[in-house]
Image (tube, rainbow, N blue to C red; front, side, top):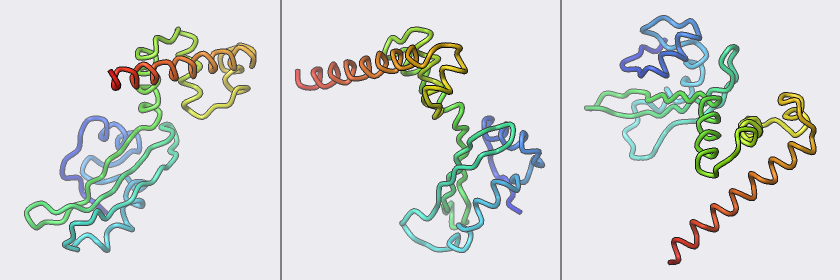
Amino acid sequence: MGEIEKINAPAQRICSLLKAKAEALPTEIWRVCQPVLPNLNLLTFQKNGLDADIILPNLGAIRIRVQNIQITQVPYLLIVLEDRQQSIYNKALSDAALLHLTERESEVWQLRLRGLDYSEISRALWISQNTVKKHIKNILSKQRSHQDDEEYALMA
C-alpha cells in the first residue's frame, strides 16, 4: 500500500477520519490511485492522472486528484484531496460577501450549491418553496448585476 511522503493538515484530517495509519494511505484513496500506477515510471511531459469524486461516511463528497510526478528521477504520486462540502461552504461565504447576500439568502445559496432542490431547501429552512424561489431569483439577479458591473469596468 502507498506510503505518505508529505501531507498537509486538511488531508491529514480526511485520512484520520478514514481511520488510516499515519504513514499509509487509506484504502478508499489507494483504490483511486491504482489505475495511475502502471504509468508511474513513464518519462513524459503529458499529465498522467485522474480525478474521482467519492462519497465517504462521516465526510460526504471528497474529490481525489491523482497525478504522477517525477522529482529528481524518482516517481511519485501527487494526491490532492478536496473536501467538497468545505469547498461549497467557502464558495457560499465568498458569494455572500461579494454579492452582499442577506443571511437567509446565504443559507439558501449554500444549500443550493450542495445540490438541494427547492423543496429540500424549503424543508431544511422551514420556509415555503415560493420563498426559496424568491431568494434564488434575488441571488441570480445579484450575480448578473455583479457580472455586468465587472464587464463595464473592463470596458472603461
